[in-house]
Image (cartoon, rainbow, N blue to C red; front, side):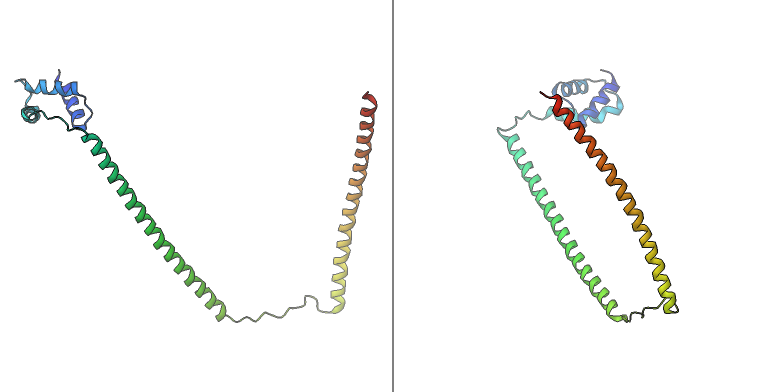
Length: 178
């Protein structure tokens, strides 16, 4: 194997992405005598690993490890959930206190201000002027109502014509049907 391929394989080995055949290839490579100088540290590691006695994984070890990892994960999730819940409760308390203080402050400000409404002022100087303004407003209202009534009459006429046309068409349909 070429040195750059071995370096890539080593990177994958340290990342835990190699299979058994690739690991055997690395062991075979480092068992040779002519290893480049920059890979001598890795050779020493692999030689020490080769010198270790082969051990078998105990029966059920994987399932026990998986259960333990799941237990730790569950415990961590519960802890995080409890922390979030505690944080939310603290924020609710703080928000409640802030809202109460705001209400108290607004009430105090309201009660401190004088509540004297200004007397209503006339816009007209004389009663005759007020009468003329009221009469003018009533004439404008009357004109607007008259326009609306004219439009209503037009709509009623159009609706009547449509109704007559519909009845005529329905009568024709009833005559044509056997």
